[in-house]
Amino acid sequence: MKRTLYAPEHEAFRRTVRDFIAREAAPYIHDWERAGQVPRSVFKGLAGIGALGFGIPEEYGGTGPAGYRFQAVIHEEVALAAASIGHHHVNTGVVLPYLLGLANEEQRARWLPGCAAGDILLAIAMTEPGTGSDLAGIRTAAVRSADGGHYVLNGAKTFITGGAVADLVLVVCRTAPYDPANRRAGLSILCVESGSEGFTVGRKADKIGRHSMDTAELSFAEVRVPVANLLGEEGGAFAQLSRNLPRERLSIGVAGVAQARAALRFTTEYVTGRRVFGSRVADFQNTKFVLAGCEAEFRAAEALADRGVELDEAGELTAADAARIKLFGTEVAGRVVDACLQLHGGYGYMTEYPIARLYADTRVSRIYGGTSEVMRSIIAKDLGL
Image 1 (cartoon, rainbow, N blue to C red):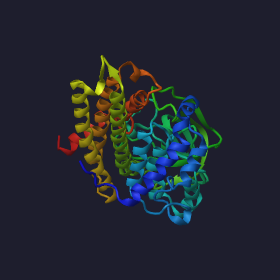
Image 2: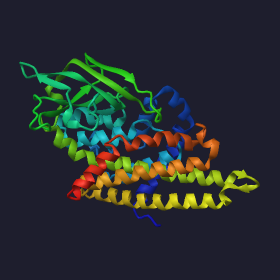
Image 3: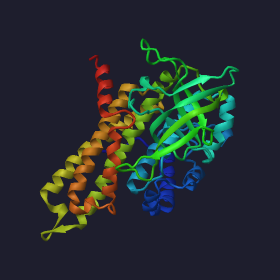
Image 4: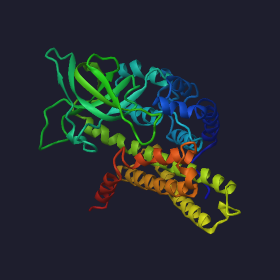
């Protein structure tokens, strides 16, 4: 099925990204997985090819207006190389849009040049122990000082992607007392700089996969955060988060499709070269049927994700459509990667083979950014159920 998503400028960018990954990322993936993160030099390199400043005005060192197609290209190339560039997709595709949409002029001048240059890495801290996907249940709290010059922040966050390496963490917290009658009220976003007194990076999670991308626990004990670091309107975070979540869920769906595409390529190459009982594994009818079914599912997910990217760039992506893309894209990725690993036999369980890493890395996509069950709830609500 012919794709029409990409224009020549996207394909030119793809070649640049592919060369960068082959040179600066793919050879080091095992080292980075053992270290639990990628070096900061990787982000500096990404800045050098224009892959960090999407949407950042040129006067701040960014690329200026740029649609999501460019970030979709990166998802595809990283997956096809069985590589990693750390938490780039969270830094650039998920967190940066909050600064672009909510930061005032002083904040933009203070933070955006560093974001574009790779000097300021970003993370967003929403999830707390015991809250999971229930953002309205957040208990981390910030109280404004008597002189009005700063907030005093206390609380804890968990499962924070990039939390251990981020220079600026967008912390979702309560700046007004919890109101059972309106659980969504009183939430704000405070930008907390690494090194702030009382801000501690705790345990790094020992995950099943995504070993080169840190996932950390964060704690805040009497952290003084300047009022100048309030992002957007005080008490308006729930609406702010709701506006940005569709893009985050789109990105996870797009990444899932990229992982399914990569799994099919790895497996087609493997079964073509592997011989069993005197025949290529590719020659067995079961192999053909399994891969044909996987390819049909992948193409359907690809078409849905491509349409989502188009809607996002047009400013028309709805929360329900983003939920559909995330749900279908990640569920398809799970089925395709699992089936492809099975065709590798015992070798598919060995981490030296990219399909094994892909299997471990893909599983979490049905959990983070809102579980598949939450996505189904959103879609059901859109159906009037």
